[in-house]
Length: 197
Ligand SMILES: CC(C)(COP(=O)(O)OP(=O)(O)OC[C@H]1O[C@@H](n2cnc3c(N)ncnc32)[C@H](O)[C@@H]1OP(=O)(O)O)[C@@H](O)C(=O)NCCC(=O)NCCS
Image (cartoon, rainbow, N blue to C red; front, side):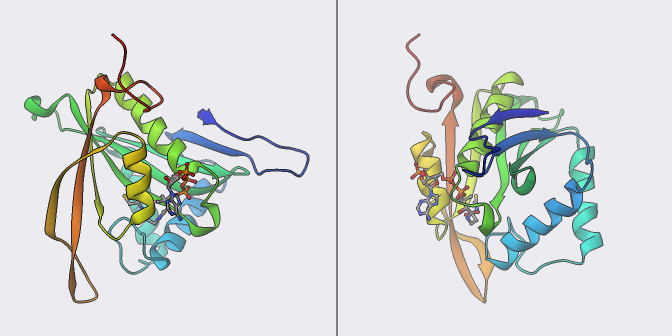
């Protein structure tokens, strides 16, 4: 189901940008999602993967995501081809104390799909889903080297609360991680600012 659409053009102008809540893979979706993830991994932004895994491992990962009750998968499309994704991860049912919190996780865009507003659309789609699920807080973490993502999250009202000096180990070096949260009730649905009521 398409839940967010930006530019739509059938006349040769801007490519059509859209975000879907993915509940099943159709057509070339799984193939395209694997391709996009591989391109992001190769470019150094592969949500934890440092090297491209075998295709069957990648396919199994995405199929597994759809089976996890606490996860919702969102995909970003440029002219209908998947170029990136993000997930909303809710707490497991036993974790009642954190039932109102979720994680915005595994966000990436393939290099060819960047610069069209899709990462922003993905974050907003995850926020819409989080609100619909009754969540009040979204958490996320990001390497401090990922400047574009940090700029995006801070522009949408995510507040930095912590730094982890041993967040990730890449090329024999520790990379610092930044931890953010957003109070969904303190921001309007566009993520722009405090609600009036
Ligand atoms: C971060 C990333 C997801 C942005 O994807 P995108 O689709 O190009 O982003 P958008 O077009 O939606 O841009 C949204 C905002 O991101 C920020 N941004 C995007 N590209 C940027 C760049 N090259 N430099 C600085 N900020 C940038 C800006 O705040 C931008 O808003 P603006 O256009 O109003 O200035 C993408 O660059 C990426 O995958 N990077 C590598 C991996 C990564 O950082 N993943 C996130 C880990 S949590």
